[in-house]
Length: 370
Image (cartoon, rainbow, N blue to C red; front, side):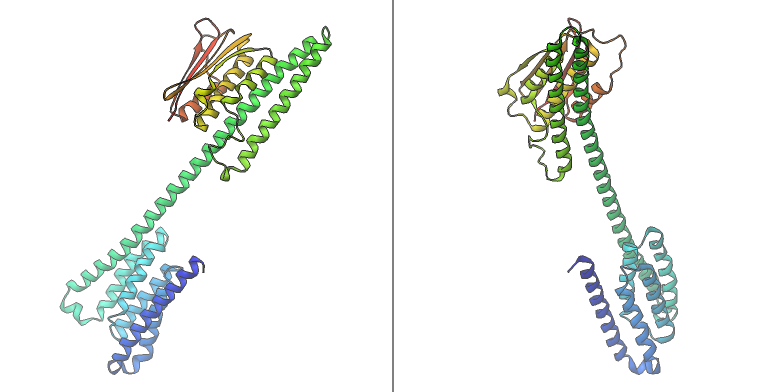
C-alpha cells in the first residue's frame, strides 16, 4: 500500500471515529433535540467529512466544518465532541495549507468561535471560556503552521544542497574535460607544427612525428571515453575507484607524450611515497602536473621542464618548473592556472606560481593528505 493511500485510510478512520462519537452523543441528547435530530446528524456528518478531507482541501474543509459547528450551536444543540474535530481540521490547515490559505485559519476560527459561543449559555456566564478556547485553537493552528514552515525550510535546504552538488559535479567535469582536451590539443598542435617544418627536408622524421600525433589522438580519445563513462555512471561510481581517471602512476606516460611533442621532461617521483594516496589527491595531483606542462608547451616556449612530486608526512608537494621565457611583467593567471587554484582550494591546499629562481616559470602546490 502506498503512502498516500495509508494517509487516506487513517483520515477516514479518524473521521469515522469522530462521527461515531458525535452520533452517540446526539442519540443520548435525543429528547432535547426532538425534530432537530436529522439536522444534527447532517451537521455532525459535515464535520466528520471535514476531518477526512483536511489534508487534500484544508481551507475548504475548515470552512465547512466551522460553519457546521457554528450552525449546530446556534440552531441545534451545542456538542461536546464536535469542537475537537474542529481543532484537528484547523491544525491541518496550518500544516497542509499554502502560506496564504493557512493564514485564513485564525480569522475563520475567530468568526467560528463568535458563532459557536453565541449559542452557549456558559460563555455568557464565564467570559474567560471563549478566550481560553480561542487560545487553544490558535495554538493548534500555530503548531501546524510552524511545522509546515520547518518542513519547507528543510526541503529548501535539501534542494540547495542538491543544486550545489550538481554545480560542483559540473565544475569538476568541466575541469576534467578542460584539462584533457586542452592538454591534448596543445600537444597535437606542437606535433603538427613540427611535422609541417620537417615535411620537406626530412620525410622520414615527418612520418615518425605524424605517427606520434596519431597516437596522441588515440590516447586522448581513450581517456575521453573513460571520463564520459564515469559521467554516465556517476551514481554507481565509487569515488575511490581508480577506473576512469588517471593518477600519478600515469605521469610516465604523460611525460613521454610531452617528450614526443618536443619538451624534455625530467620526472622525480617515488612510487612508494604516493602509492597509498587518497584517490581524490592522486587524480588532482596528476591534473595539476598535466595543466602545468600544458601551459609550458602553450606559453612557455621551453625546451626542458622538471616535475617533482613528493610526500612529506601529511602533505603532498608538487613542483613544476621550466627553462622557458617565464611570466611577463604583471601577468594575469589564465584559465589553466585558475583551474589549478580551484582544485587546490577544494582540497584545502595552497599554490604559488611565477618566475623560477633560474628563469622560466615555476608552479608549487601543496595538498594536505588526510
